[in-house]
Image 1 (cartoon, each protein chain N blue to C red):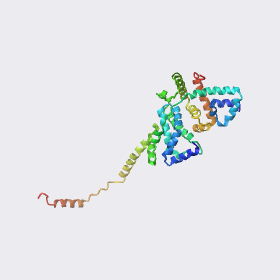
Image 2: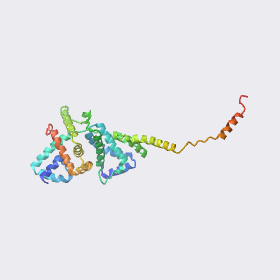
Image 3: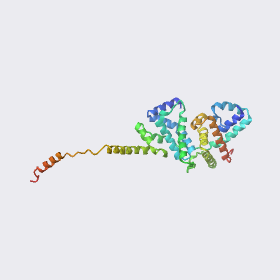
Image 4: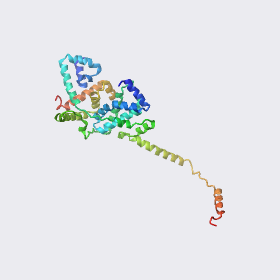
Length: 141
Length: 182
C-alpha cells in the first residue's frame, strides 16, 4: 500500500484497526508496524478517535414500549399503523376518518341523483281504515 | 446472533409472531437509539424514530431481503431515512434542553465535570456537521458499520463515503482544537 493511500484511509476511518476496512486492514497493519512515520500518523488519528469516543449517549430500554405498540392480528397491525409516531404521519388517521365521511357523501349524492321519491299513497287503503274507525261503537257506551 | 437465526425471526414476524419481534427489538433497539440520538439530539424525537423503525419492521418484514443486506443495515437504513425526513421538516437542528441527562459518566466529580464539558463540545461539534458528513461519521465511527454498509445506507460509493468521512474528521479536528490531544 502506498503511504498516500494509507494516510487517506486514516483520514477517513481513524487510527483504530477495528474501524479500518476489512479489505485494507492487513496491508495497513503491515505498513504502520514497519514505518515510524506511519505509526505517528496512526497515533494522531487515535487522538481524535479518543476525543470522539468521549461523546456517549444514554440509550434507554424502549423494548416494552415498542412491543406494546404492535398487535398480533392483521387488524391490530392496521390500527398500529394508523397511530402516527412522527408529525408527517398524521395523514394516516386523517385519511381513515375522512374516508367513511367521503363515502357517505358519495352515497348520498348518488341516491339523490337516482330520481324522484317513490313514495306512493294508497288512497283506497286509507279510506277503508277511516271507515273502520267511524263504524266502531264508542268504548264508553 | 447468527444471520440464519435472525432471518428465521424475520420470517416469523411476517406471520405476526410477537415473540420473534420482541427478540429482534431487544437485539437492535439500543444500537438504533444510539444512532438516532446522535443524529437528532432531540431525545424524544429520536426515540419516536426508533419506535417507527421497529413498527416498519413489524408491518413490512416481508420486504426485508436477507440476500442484499444484514438486518442491522436494513434497520439503520430505515432509521436514517426517518432522521432525514425529520431534518427536512425542521430546518434547524434542535438541541435537547436536558443535554446533561444524555451523557453517561463513571468518573470522579472533578474529572466528571471535565468529561461532561468535553463530551458536550464533541456533541455540539458533531451536530454542527453537514447532514451527510454527520451521517457518515455516526454510521462508521459510532455504530461500527462497515464502509460498504454505510455507503449503501447513504446511497453513495465507498469512495464518496471516504471523502465524507475525511471532511467530517477534518472539520471536527478544527472545531475541537481546544480538546484535541488533551
